[in-house]
Structures are given as C-alpha cells and as structure tokens.
Amino acid sequence: MIEKQNITLSIPKSLLRQAKIVAIEQDKSLSGLMIELLTELVEHKEEYAAAKRRHLALLAENNDLGINGKITWTRESLHER
Image (tube, rainbow, N blue to C red; front, side, top):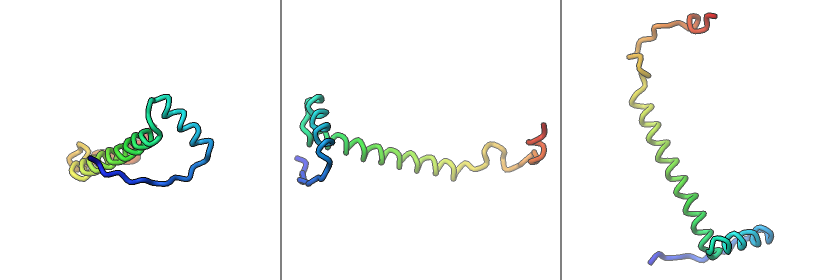
C-alpha cells in the first residue's frame, strides 16, 4: 500500500468549485483528480529531463556535424547572392 500524506491547500473558491465539477464529470474524487494531475506533471518533468540528457550526450559525442572537422567554405561564399 502506498503511504499517503494529507495536505492543506489554499485556493480561490471559484477554482475549487470548478475543480469539483471537473472531478464529478470524470467520476473521480477531488483528491483522485489532484493525484492524477500531479503525477502527470512529475512524469512530464522526468521525461523532459531524460530527453534533455540524451540530446546533450548526443551533442557531446558527435560534434563534427558530418564534416569530419574540415570546413570547406568561407562565410563570404555562404552569403554570396
């Protein structure tokens, strides 16, 4: 069983009213809705961090960009019209 912790939130009454309606529409309790939303938020953050680490590792290991370290053009030739 997952250990749970009660918390107290201070949110505007109008937001609480709307959140209760959303929870009812989704056949969930307000606590269940909050758990779902917070879980999604944390998972998204973790997925983003993992993707960032993967991309930074790719950049670090493959920095020649397919030119084998040899630049065969000049700035001027790239901007010729």
